[in-house]
Every structure is written in C-alpha cells, then in structure tokens.
Amino acid sequence: MGTYSILLKCSRRCRLKLGRLGYVDVKRGHYVYTGSALGKGPASLEGRIDRHRRRSKTVRWHIDYFTKRGEIHLEGSVHIRSRVRLECRINETVLEHLRGYPIVQHAGASDCQCPAHLVRVTRPRDGDLINRLERIYARFGRPITNRYL
Image (tube, rainbow, N blue to C red; front, side):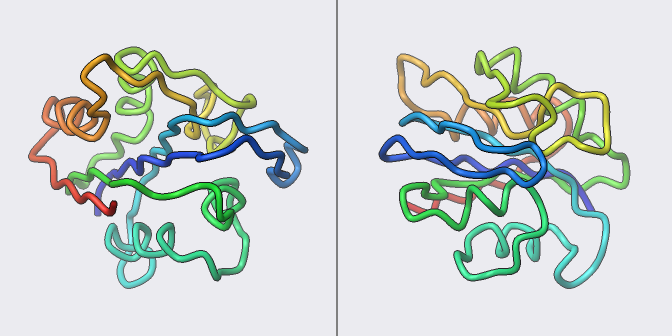
C-alpha cells in the first residue's frame, strides 16, 4: 500500500487521446503522474509501476494512453509505503515545487478535486527531476527510488 509517482519524458511532440477527456497535444519534455496503490498483486505498488513500464496492456486509465506511446519513456519512479492516502497531497507538492501544470483538466484525477495527477513539469537547472521527486516524497515518509534509463 502506498503512493507513487512516475517520471516520464516525451522525446518528440505528439497528439494522443486521453479517453473521454479527448485529444491533447503533448510537447517534448517531462511529465509526472502520481497515483496510489492500495491492493495486492497487480494493484500493489510494484504491480502498478510494472504496469506503467509495459507498453502492451489494456488501456484503462488516462496514464495508459501515455505509457503506450513509443515517444514517451519512463525515466524513473519514486514511492512510499503508507496506509494513508497521500496521492493528492504529494501531487499538490509536485505541482508547486516542480512548477507543474495539467496538460488537460482532470487528467489522471477523475476521482478527486485535484486539477490533474498527470502533469507537465519544468526541468530544474540541475536537470535532476528524479532527485527532486525523491525530496518531495521524503516529506511524507521514506522514499524508494528507481531509475530506468
């Protein structure tokens, strides 16, 4: 059980459909998706992150439209174990500290009042977004970080 964020990089501009939210233009750059994993097996933290790493899957959530695309790569993930739902609080901190903004309202956040949980973020001068995510998570617990590229 816990909360996780995945760091994605879009290598070239593309247009994709986000389910009922419609089509969105995705610019080159970095994106963060923050979610929760409250179950076991495929619904566990490891199961959810593994799902995001796979290109071949049934599209169920907004983030699936992103992670299936060849021009969008998963660079890393950060998660913490917690029985408390921290998804919205962490997402709010990501928006503030990584100068994030929704690519479209409610992307990845159809079950809460957040503007979006799938957001575009600004790359910091030092360029290390995964370390920035790790520091955000350290405010809420003991973060576990994975780098994939």
